Length: 111
Length: 112
Image 1: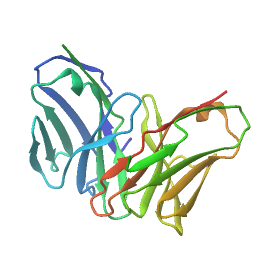
Image 2 (image 1 turned 90 degrees about the vertical axis):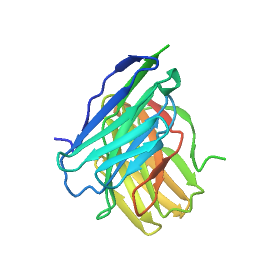
Image 3 (image 1 turned 30 degrees about the horizontal axis):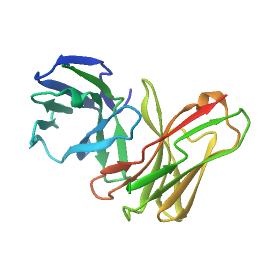
Image 4 (image 1 turned 180 degrees about the vertical axis):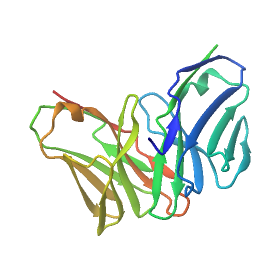
């Protein structure tokens, strides 16, 4: 079993819809949680990171962590065609400097 | 200029050839990584280095070797390339405290 699991998609939504992405993780030692966005033929870029359970908002993006259920979410409001990309969740624990990625979910926002 | 630069961006090589992928970074981080990305398999860690004298194997290190020439430079070698090493390779560096990673643009390697 992978330590960080993510549905590969693809997830197709109309422009303006809310995109909801989820990951689960198995290792309770993970302390920090991140979302990366990867456009085709590009390297992943850090989108958001969170430390504790709860929500973190940045513009149209909201990251949510529920440590009790080991669940990570990313919501994109008012989605745009430019949001079409692969989104990777990641979890990090300082001990051992272990950064583990989910497999990524491909998102397509249709105009 | 990009924080993490990889060369070459694309490479086609023949089975059995030795090939080196190079990475340099301007973030000033000690920690550097090499990942491989395959469709459906996500990012898999090949090697990582916490400083110039510290090299560690990742989950898929067989068939690969690395060299950390300086804090800013970390190269990946395929001693004898094989077709199933065809993939997209990423170099990354990270913040040591919270694990924020910064990736290069990737090297698309094809072994024929």
